[in-house]
Length: 435
Length: 61
Image (cartoon, rainbow over the protein chains, first blue to last red):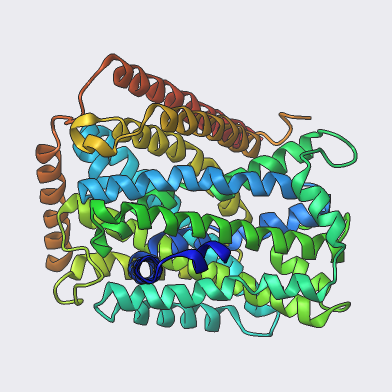
């Protein structure tokens, strides 16, 4: 203050002008970010899909707040992986499926595309399972839920504008934050939360097979193959350029922060209200909480429905974009249905087929849920390895290729994910392996 | 019926055109890339083998 008053009027003016310039620059950067943000936030929040919500409720109920530190660690992991898709999409202007075809040839291209289609379709079924289970708590029949979802998801993409679709998807992302007020409603111990979030440790009972399986499930739900394909295609459809990469990274970072926040608050809720109880699904958690805390039970059910809907919206698009890229169909949300008939036809085909499976009486829904984990194990390592190789290709990436430090971080993360997700897939196939 | 055969014909043509378009991998095939792709093939063969094994023992029971 004293220093400022000692300045000459001219120096004071230049200081004011400098501050005003910085202020205008920050406002301009914020406006730019508001325009560019979207793909990262949507993919990361959609990552907390119906399967993810179930995993978090089971984690909170079984181990309380003891695994919060692990969830927090997964945020940067998700960021580092997804950030690569932003660079790859902005530089190559190609979706992940097309980039794999072009770089590695048709064998690996078809493998990735067909595996993605199968994984996405099965995951879509699990989203519909989550949505119908959530709405059944409010007495809504499954067929009404499925029909409603078809209408909402169909009308969202028929606007013929990527921007409209993105804004609507962001509204559903806000819905995913519903678990934050729920955590405040249950009044947890703040000291306990901070202690468990900041100090890595194993829950009482030590490192057991059950704990290992749950840790793997949390990793499996944080990094899914469809996320790589979705974000890269979304970046391309939005038209991000190399100069936008910085904002794209911020978009992804904020998204990964939100995904961890949502997961953390849900775990806190379940740790407080369902301590030590074995939970098989998020809908079951909502039902069990209802008699003691009606509001929180309702919030969990609404959040589960929203998570399933957001997941289904993104996953169905990931497959449609991939097909469009490879077959050379018009595949932008900026196209009207008449301009991109195959792209939209595939989207609706995927949507309707997944919804119908849930309506089939006695359909093996539990088997399908387990099968998703196994099939994803075959695609995730391949997609991650391709991502690392593409990000190191000088011809493709130029100055945007991975630096040595980025490679050390990314390769370590990818190797850990591959090992753990493989073990997760194998233990799903052979549940007694770890006993 | 004609509509279905037209759709399948169009898809088959699309597959053929895609195979032709991406016949040659564009990435620089360094030793590291070759090792990665070979490892990936071995990994996938092992995983598919495990799945088939699981399928067979489930059927037997």
